[in-house]
Structure formats: C-alpha cells, structure tokens
Length: 246
Image (cartoon, rainbow, N blue to C red; front, side, top):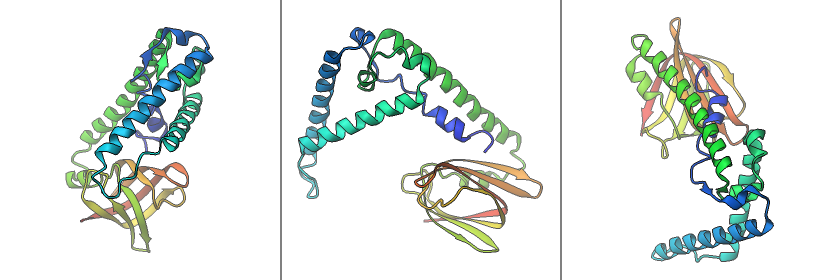
C-alpha cells in the first residue's frame, strides 16, 4: 500500500474523538465526586436505552430479558476499554490537560481540552483526506492503463475473507460480502506472485485496496484487519483477476 497504509488507517481512527464531547467546567480539576456523579448518570442512561431496546424486541421470540447487572458490567468494561484506548492514542500534550481520564471517557471535558482535541482531530482528518485524494488523483491519471471494470470489481470494503485456495496457476480468495458494498464472493488471481502476505488471513476484515499497473501485470494491494495479527497487508502481482458474484 502506498497511500491507504496502516499508518493512514490508524490516523483515520483519530479523527472523531471530539464528537459527542460535552463541556463540563468541573472537569478542569480532578474530582472523585464528579466522576461518581457522571458515571452514575451515564450508567442510568445506558440501562434506560437497553431497557427500551428490550421492550421493542419483546415480540421477537429469541429476545432475552434485560439483565441490569450484566449490562452494568458491560458498561464498565466499555469504559475501561475507552480509557486504555485514549491513553494509548492521544498525544501527551492533550493527555496532560485531562484531569481525569475516566471522566473524559464518559464524554465530559473542559473547554480547553475540547478545543485542543478538536484541533488534533481536524488536523488528522486533513491528512487522511489528503492521502485519499492523492490516491484518487493517481487512479485518474492511470484511467487508460487500468480497466474501469477491474477497478470497480476490486473493491471489498467491509467484506470478510472466509477462505483461501492456492495452487501454481491461481490464488483464490473467498469473501462474505454481507456487510460490504458488493455482491462479489470470490476473486481469483491468475499467473500470480505473492509479494506480501502477513500470516493467516482467513477471517480477516477487508478494509481498503489499491491497484497499480506494473509492466504487463497488475499489483493488487489490500489492507486487512486480521483477527490473528491486527492490521496486515496482502499484495499480489497477477496478470489478471476474475470475479464471481453470488
């Protein structure tokens, strides 16, 4: 991948942290009382929401009654996950301004933190958008070198790789397109060479792709989210790719 890289994807995850934040002047200082108050309020909202979902689902024979204790545990686990995520992904300049990361994870922050975070996210968005636009411009410059149908078909965002077949003549990827934007369930690369394959990709979530003409072949690049190895690349050189739809 030359444009839609692992680093690009990770940066894209840091473009919306500011959305949904509510200004709370008391968050400027550490306060156990504030944390307990906000936690209690947000937990109550969480339980009310899931109570409503449960009521709407009562007609469904497989619906399960709401277990408040279980939902409370799940709410706490989500908060712990968010705290760790922010601890790992936010720059120290912003982390140092956050008096209590627990309150921040509950989407309450001081005006200064919201301002700094908004700037951080908007700058990230600009970088992400710039790389996307550069790749689109690159494709337009090669519009005669890559068949339009090939570009349209080699697009599997949000599909899941369900299997891989490989022999000397072809490399075939089977896909579950249920969550994607295509009805293609199989792509076969002919006369191929695997340039990059980071371990087992079965079960991987297909994120983004790039295509490049190289001499008399194509290079097919994919960024995947593997359940085994996290973000990973798949790069194949092939004379052609055949697509099979459901």
